[in-house]
Length: 519
Ligand code: KIV
Ligand code: ZN
Image (cartoon, rainbow, N blue to C red; front, side, top):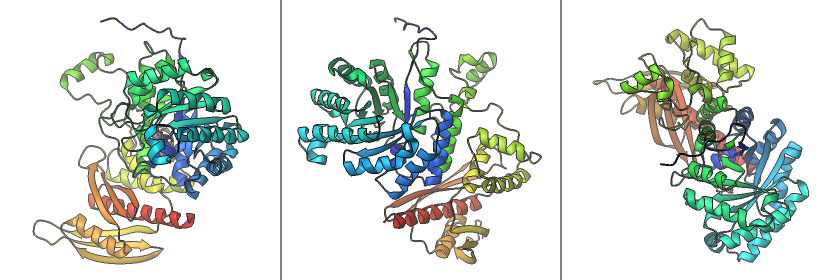
């Protein structure tokens, strides 16, 4: 087999990273975030040094507008983008939120260009779509020269029409043109050819950066993005942990680490500070409550775990036998922490910052108390334990709080839970029987909160090893159109279950409140 040509060290083109965790990522079921959570993610993206943060879709809701505005106002460094359809109302609203970023504000406007979308979704003729695209870009360009245009469903668009649209929007002022694989349909060589076709056919193509945006329906989003930059794309749109619509988007950490690890044959690099990758992944998991699969590349729990004896032996002799990148390079500390009951404020604060948690004073004080309580129960407190504590402590205003819980159960007893909660500041108590300790606990909480939500998922796992490990419970509950995930951790799994359920009910309540406020 012919060997790929080696690339000289200083011969690498910088590929821009456009992160859409807060927009496309947030659109995925169970991934919705409140404003404060979005800002925390944006701060982590700033540390990662992404080139562009797509902070939301300002016209979609007042919450989205506020989040984009706050991110535009607070974050320094990366450009801040806001999505809008190709309509004046959308564009004006987007700029109202983005203007706080000044020159770093980017209007990202889009319209679908494939026959199937134009006919069935837009019910518009191609010439009308072309005119709407041009009009939108011109409108956006009145506010800022930083305009991105996306041809939604570009991969299924007739190529001559795609080229016509791209040429027209660049002439109208677009400085970035995005060629999305909206439905995750393409394969690497086909995508390569589409980008190459545009490079070869569109006369003014050099006046704009070509961006790519790949969905993962066939598991090819990262491979397709790599093929696209080989054909001339200069920007890649991606998300932390690869979250996004349906099967997700191109995973930022995978794309970035491919370029870093295969610098020898891929003449590209990024501006990403890779030691913030693991903290970013963890922060997102903590906020959404959606865990990363253990075998996920780069940030999965097993990504650097070597189990087989033969592998362990090789690793002990020489790490590079089985390790193509180091855990440290993605921010995974090899030390696996020695925080314990003698550790003080300083040590905890430092570790939390390393993990990407920048808590305010009140959140930190509560986290420190929880840390001390846990350290009394466990010999060592691991990073994963800290993730769980922060999940519990950095939450928004909670209507429901767990005070006390007592459960009797066993092979002979009828499981009974007595739960005491604080609801709106008032202490209330209820005892319920059920099919086991968790069922009786949830029944009591449901009665106390008068909740109509249904529980669709319950998972329990242990955060670290050992019988003194914390149990971590994740639940998914729904009411009406709203579905949320709740998480709770404790060395007692019934307490962890109660916390997770109450967390979910609080999130549901906050979500419903936000919807009412937005109306
Ligand atoms: O997948 C897609 O086409 C999108 C666009 C709005 C960029 O998310
Ligand atoms: Zn998308």
